Amino acid sequence: MTATAPGAPVVLRVAGRPVARYVTRPELPARLSPRPCLHPVTTLAGTAVTELSPADHAHHLGVGVAVPDVEGFNFWGGRTYVRDQGPTELDNHGIQRHGSFQLRDPDGFVEELRWVAAGTELLRERRTVAATELTDTAWALDFTFSLTNITSGPLSIGSPATNGRPGAAYGGFFWRARKEDAAPEVFTAGAEGVASVHGTRADWLALTGRGSSPSGGAEGGGDWTLVFAGATGTTRRDPWFVRTAEYPGVGSSLASEARLPVPPGETVVRRIVTVVADGRPDRDEAAALVRKAVSQ
Image 1 (tube, rainbow, N blue to C red):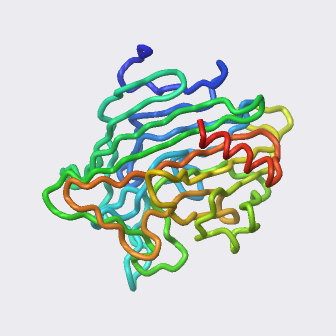
Image 2: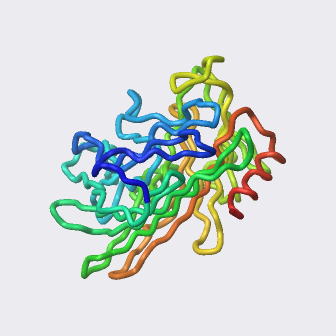
């Protein structure tokens, strides 16, 4: 395990190249629901594919886990959707607190986090993140989180959709992608466009954008593609939450049609593997990269 000062960002590397920076203790206002996150995440060529607190949604924090409703507490940030009232500013924001690293290496880490709201710890999370090389133009981010209810009573996870806002079942793993001049394209193995893929349980989903600068680097770069796969084996596959027009973002929906119950002592486990690629692979190439990434 590499030696790192407490609270210092963890830098993930693939083939010796830095590809992601993990911040454990971001200094953010309470209404943004502070939480550990990955930003910036880049392709192997250095093109940034995440944003942190962008102007359109200040509570979007790179790559991480964000849930808008844990027993009424907001771990997403921003306003809370209230049934028959709409988005409302409430003093109900929780915080994800970094506890410790059980493992910390250049290619990944295992972390313990505490989800705290109103002075009470509701959930204990174990987060496992690994970065692996796939090709000379693509790498994979393997992200698993386990949420355990450590209270003496039942908890449930909700979303704006379960609280009365159709189509807004966000909450879970979430990736805020880089906003370019043009909205990115989105497709799965059998569909294309937000209207066709949002809310589906496709094996994988690709988001691809055109770079804003040919020079590369964190402030620009060439074309990029993210391919998300809800890995099977340990959990059911959740529906995908997708946005491209207002902002580019992809996540998995823990609570889509109904609230997700978490009884005392029970654990919710999810694994998302994301291919981070330079260029614009087609469907067959995207599928091949996903198969390789999930099997590693």
